[in-house]
Length: 294
Length: 285
Image (cartoon, rainbow over all chains, first blue to last red; front, side, top):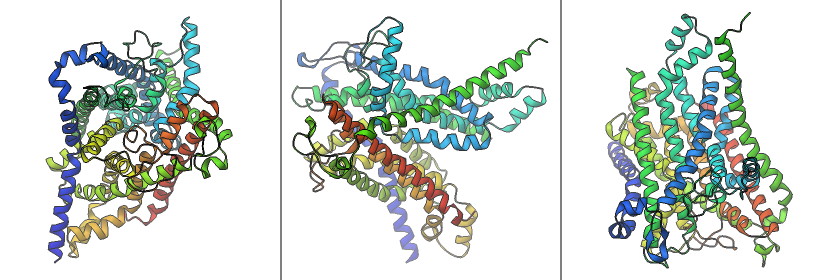
């Protein structure tokens, strides 16, 4: 009886595990099936690289949206990467224990704040600042633009990049620090060595994961980025990221032929990019882990 | 005496590191400050105890009780479903079952990918499934999509806790003749209970705050939740929709709704910390 229970439980757990693991595969199948009509009608390069977005006339060029997503994400990463690496180095190498122990929950809390709240704060607090910055360059803008989206996204990816980087830095074996101190290095020189020789691949993985999170973020960006379907030419231009395209066009999705399929295709692009980035990051992290294990 | 360039570099970077940490931490403070300053004046008892009356979206009477209850229903439903699915997976990932095999690695990888999938993609996928089943936007659809969203978060968090169970503890259970299932249910589950609770709270917090995934799948209504097959309102969408109206009075209510949401998330996060701290002493080390 006990054996049978164990066996049944084992099978059940295996079943649930397989089902849950295949979740992403199911999503991919669903999206591919739904975007098949547009993919079979238009060549892939035209869909990805044409800048004409005019669903009424049957032109579906995703280029403006892809560039929109990439520029907003790039601005976010330019802001977030230096801040996050310096913070992670400080927390892992310099900060006394009590400071680290108060800072980490605070940074974790950032990860739990809902994205609409970030969007709201973007509208209320970031947009006025961005307008001021634009005024310095003699540009007048509504504030709903790439820079605002990038700043909001940067704050949203702080906790991801910092948490992973800090862990990677802390996991660098102590002998590297001790050897540099023994050779008369200063604390910062030792930290630099730990960073460059030990932690760099892991930090790159952290950045990739942060990028991937920013890439698919929807509500916060949608609320502040302007949503104009044109390729942005400066950071003070509005943009229209893929995720915002999906969220905004849900209502009218059904009425125009192929529109629905085009929106599914946008979701598919997001999924493919996220899966590829995660593959890259976990490949790097596994390599790092193996290096210290051996 | 000339300044030592090594010392100068050391000091410059120390200042930069402290400045960065300050910026990161103050960004959190700014988020809280903005939401509290803007939201608190608009928050009233009526806001959280009544549903929208006629003309609410033009600045009329009413509140967001529909959104508060709707969000709680959505998050509770999704969290319960997630627990049912997440526990077996997390327990199965133990060394005693699939341990460090290629299969375990594949499962963990696929969970990492699922964790990274943007919530809008979950929303679109849920919408496809509902279309296929002929369902309209409703509470059940929202619960379904949020379950998908919460699952990887919950399993990852549980997996991390389960990994901390000392092997010696399991071995002593095996030594007195218990089998894997008995050990898992009676020893491991007890040992990790606080960790499980905080994983559940974490997932609940993520579920209640997400907007993009339920945008297509739950709809929105001014009424309180009626049944699983009716549309429900939700707090994140209440913030989003009220902010989208051109009326300042209604936008004020968006700020207040955001404050309610933020307080909820904050309370959940503190709760999870308390649970972890309180039950830590009952855990065998």
